[in-house]
Length: 76
Image (cartoon, rainbow, N blue to C red):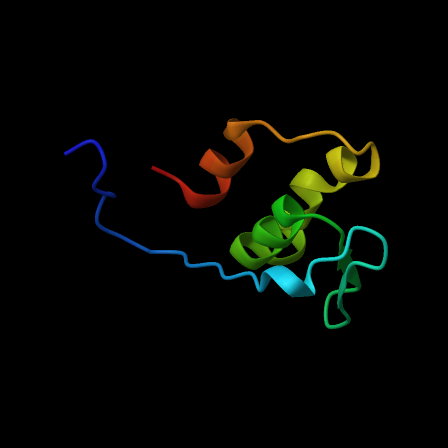
């Protein structure tokens, strides 16, 4: 089926909604990253510092990210 992932690595991300704060953000001191949005937090959980780097510019410009970003993070 088109909705079934290919066999291989499965990535899971979780976000606790009340922890999200677009002003203060969520600090990840182990990587020196502070996420400000749901999208950047998900990207960080899925790809660590490199995942966050994919959305960092969009986050700083306060613009949305495209679906292509998450396709890159989660694969097929």
